[in-house]
Image (cartoon, rainbow, N blue to C red; front, side, top):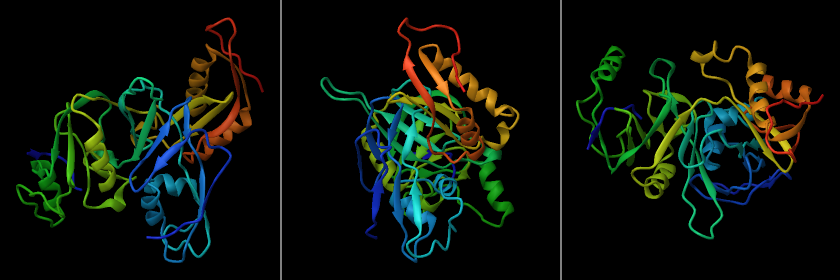
Length: 326
């Protein structure tokens, strides 16, 4: 089948912080966490060997390149050095979207999959880093579903992409057959939005960057797992949430990411946007917020959940007032 879409060890010493909020299983591909609130995963520390790059570490821990850079702004991405401490930002506030099917938070560059729990099973979420569309080929927002799945897809680059490559001296064939040089990788999930896919890649070190023509690209091992676990018909929601608020263990967490460049006007007043998120949660919770911690988290925008207050369910049920403290 042909699609018009974009192109596409080591022993580590790691220690989990006391922030662990769920049990997870991890391997070469993605991570799956038991859901017991709005926050899953744990922050992990590792140390480098001399030949490590941030991209190497990102791939080892199923992280995207940008989220690793944001969490480690003082670490040289190409010359990390020997025994340099590196933070793995593997804790996540779940997006404010229905927890079913696939949810893709575009500015976070991360996919969440909520498989349907069988009777007696605890609900889980699997999460994977992705690449998204460049500013001039932005990934769409909205609701759709997986309409088909293809192993070993061929790639039929649209005329617009062929022209773009030709202008740079790269003449693309009309059809790229399956194989190691196919930018779609070995697996593809076609969405109900015409021309858009969730697929693999032949350039895994680009995961976690804005490098596609609008499709969502995963590590080869991650797309294989998604392909075999996500059924046709699964709902897919593409959301735009650079700021996420969650509650776990009576703690209020804020996770902040840089907004997409094209959304500068929409998120011009970041604090008002976060305050609105908190107000929505305060309908069901009594909250006390540390405003300095909130401001620091918003300015830092490091993609890591930070505690910014405490919250307790309202005994009288939901109300329509915001109760925030200093």
